[in-house]
Image (tube, rainbow, N blue to C red; front, side, top):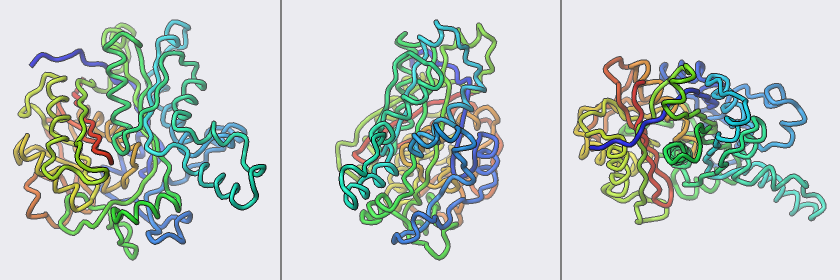
Length: 408
């Protein structure tokens, strides 16, 4: 296979139910300790639990005035992006700022703001609606606020491919750098949907776990007793640079983004294609883009949401393409499913896996499903030769995005 040029990952940032900051997140996923618990905002919902970011004080992190004009999904993104940008050491000279892109994915945008303002409209009429509703709620505002806050004047884009949105944003960033449209890109995904509307909507599709008496055991990817996913929230950010530029300035290169594949199931608005053939197209496209064969992949960070049907389809796809021996994990056992942020958060985890040769365990994987013939990493982290890995993200509407990430 002929590979397209890889790009350097020089900065990482994370905010999730596993903590604020990369270090806290990585420690929690390595521990395999779930984060699902009752959520106050969902106390009257039929599924009253989720995976919320702990101890997130937007006022202290962003300032009272700024935080008050931002939806939570943007607040989370700004904190994750700031961590990634600081680690990367992105220069602030005008030529660099002019050539730095921002691409942020989200499935829902500012849903907390939208729900609040719709209630105000219904209760008190149009004059009660905040004049900053749209700047807070629109799905491109997280990307816009990152660009405004740091002075980045390259292309600013928002991707929306449901639960693949964050991974799609990373892939688009890769393509912008390869095309010459930018020299650097801040990419990622963000989501804050622990709200009554989203809880009710997902519950009505029967996609959520109903383990209300034991939320910590609810997110159990690939386990025989899984009964649905657990909603989460969070943001993941990566700084991408062309490899020559990163080397020229002596940047610390965390990992290499080597390939991206995208496809559509063209099958159903919520259900995956039963054999995963649409997702397989994205997997094979990512492999071809990176110039890898299936046998060179040493680890897969699976989409693994903990739904009975979705995990089974994904397992069949992995076994068909890679065989039963590649180590597979789903960090959603710890973080829950952060929807549009998931692909970016998991890209960060995958980058750390290849750089440390360490694969996190799949939380709550206790009883193997006879229909899942995979090597699921469980119980404790696994150390090994993990120089090439894939991160899978699949979304409603049949959107599929796959990232190929390698050790630097």
